[in-house]
Length: 293
Ligand code: SF4
Image 1: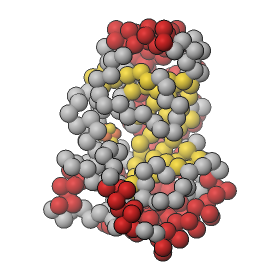
Image 2 (image 1 turned 135 degrees about the vertical axis):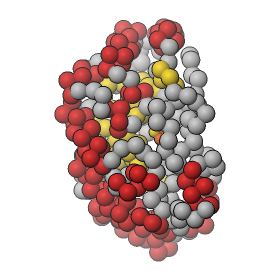
Image 3 (image 1 turned 135 degrees about the horizontal axis):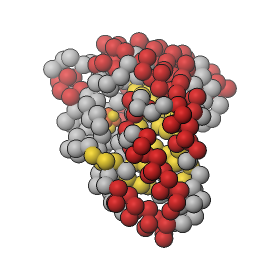
Image 4 (image 1 turned 30 degrees about the vertical axis):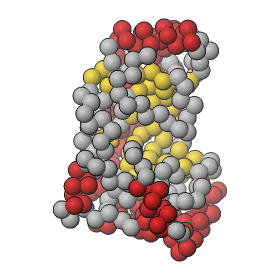
C-alpha cells in the first residue's frame, strides 16, 4: 500500500481498509494544526491507487467499508473522484460505505447532481472538521471559509442524501471570543442538521501559529474550567437531533452516544457537575498528553 503521509484514522468508524487518494492538505493554514505541515499537497498517482486496490482485492475482497485518505481527499474534482470510486467498486464489489474526512470547501466544486452520483457509487458519510460556526473565530484560526459557506455546502450534502459529521473545537476562540464561538457554532450546526456532532478540546501543539499567538499575548487559552463552561454553552444551544461524541475533549465524563436531544439535559447536568467538582489538574494532564489533533 502507498501511504506517504501520517495516517489519521477515524476511531469511531469501521475504518478498514484505508485507501490514500491524495497527499497532504490543500489548505494547510489552520493556525492550530501541524498535521500536514511538511507535506505538500498533491493527488496520489492514479497507478498507485490502482495498485493498492489490486492488493486490497487480494487481501480483503469482501470489504464493505473503506476510508479515503489523506487530509481532504474530496478536494478532487468530480471528474477525478468518480473514476476512483468506480475503481473501488470494480476491485471491491461488495463495497457499501465509502467514508472520508474532508474540508467544507471541498464540496464547493461539486453540484448536487454530482454529489448524488458519488453517493450512488458508495460515498455515504463525510466528516467535516468545521471547528466553529462563528465568523470571528473562523477568520482568527485561518479556516478559509465563513459560516455562510458551511450552511451552503451542508445543504448540498443534505439534498444529495450524504450523511455528514461536524466537529466543534472547544477552546479555539480563546477567552477573547469563547461565548460567541460556542453560541454561534451551536446555531450553525443546528441549522445544518448533521448526523453526528463531535467535540474536541484545543491543544496548543509546538509549531502552531496559535501557540506563538499565545506566547506574545494575542491569544488567551481557556482554563480547564472555562473549557467546560464553553462546552456546556455549546451543548445548551445545540438543537439538532444527532449523535454526540466528545473525542479527546476536556470532559472526563463519557458523553458519547446517539439521541442527543433525549440526552441533552443529562449532558448539561454532567458538565455542570464537572465544572463544580471536576479534577481540573487531571483534565489538564490528559489534554497535555495529546500529541495530535
Ligand atoms: S485542520 Fe485540517 S484543513 Fe486545517 S490545516 Fe489541518 S489538516 Fe488542513
